[in-house]
Image (cartoon, rainbow, N blue to C red; front, top):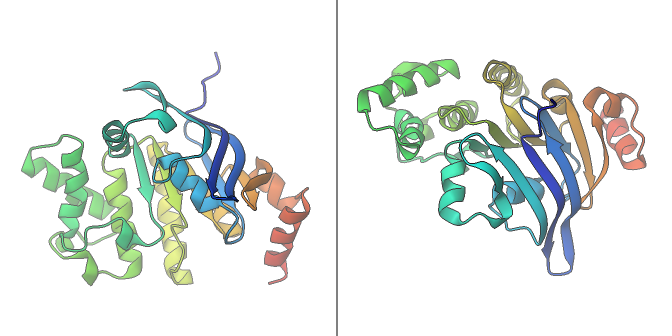
Length: 258
């Protein structure tokens, strides 16, 4: 028997007045799969990601998530307390700017431990031990567990945000330009870390990126968005090596001849 998708998005619309930021988007995400959403700025990819998570309420459409704990959940109909419970246990969201996903006035350890406590952990010693283990796992010196995130570099802040998100072992992680704004050498290190963690944890990921190299490295499938619509979808190598839609061809050629 074929395993059903972990997430099914059907006919999703997000409109701001007359503007269709997301227009009739449908796709599935399977367990253990990384799906990249690419397109230029203003294509609607981040709005799509935020509407799936629940930061933005869709105008129309459905987002069905299949949870081991909660059963089949229609996310667009979920009340806020249940959405928050899902978001801090089975889901994660990695912001482009790590400062949006961290508490800068709390220590590195407290940032990781807070999510564990939100998921029900109460033993302080075990919480601190897990925070130490995760700092090491994302290549942050564990001796910095009591330091504030504002004393970290941008790359370290992003790795701390990733530790905070993954400490509860979510099944699905939404990533919004996780390498954006970082130096090339820092990007390469972070991408290598993300690739290892995704494989080791068997994560399903929806990855928004404007960088086709990031999509090729991390994703099995790719969606190309233009003006709120998905204009092409398929296996990553297939789409990037032989794009069919004129907009996809333009994106790929802009990288080749940059």
